[in-house]
Image (cartoon, rainbow, N blue to C red):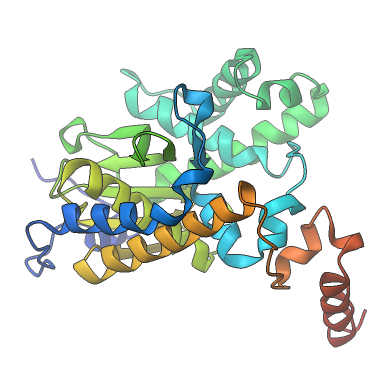
Length: 312
């Protein structure tokens, strides 16, 4: 029986489905890129922890790679201590709801699913979001349930129903160990469909599109490629509020570019965090959220110029 999709769902199928024209990935490229990354680390190996335990590794994730390529001052000390808010917890709740919905044997109303997701996250003491959720009063919780239910309902209306035959993998971890397990590059994929070489990696987003989202997905594709020796066919960001899909076919050029970005960022991150290198300041929009902006003349000058240009 042929599946019938609405126009929004069909758009996703058309953009993420297989095509006859697929980039060719050379045999041996994974070994070549891994060797290039390992060789780039040779000048900083003496700075690394011994890797004798999980805690004694140098860890870097997609946000760290992005930050070190943005402003090194922000990477070192500008992120501050993360705090959960009404706005930033919605993505986690909707992601959890999508995860649960995929594996349910019987469908549930969106609001009930969101309520269950919030309850599970609230009761999971291993997740920092639990401390925030348990402090919500009845009104704030109801408001959060309503907003997340709206986003999840929009997802079910606009994203095609996910079949078991697509081999969905939800919140699956990715990791790349380097330098004899002294370095770990880690991440978590919101949704992966299929097996290599037909795998599609999808990130769900609740904010505005960003160039960093492309870089994040390219990093995930690279990690998967180096682990399996086969690259995913495609990566995509799916924006839950707008239902926009930004997708990219994975090619040799993209994998090489992602590897260069990773090795440059990783070496510099080690130099900054472990070697005491002087950070290069690159003022940008991050200055508005930087925890050390009040003590950064470069950032203050940038913000003053931005405020003047915007008429503040």
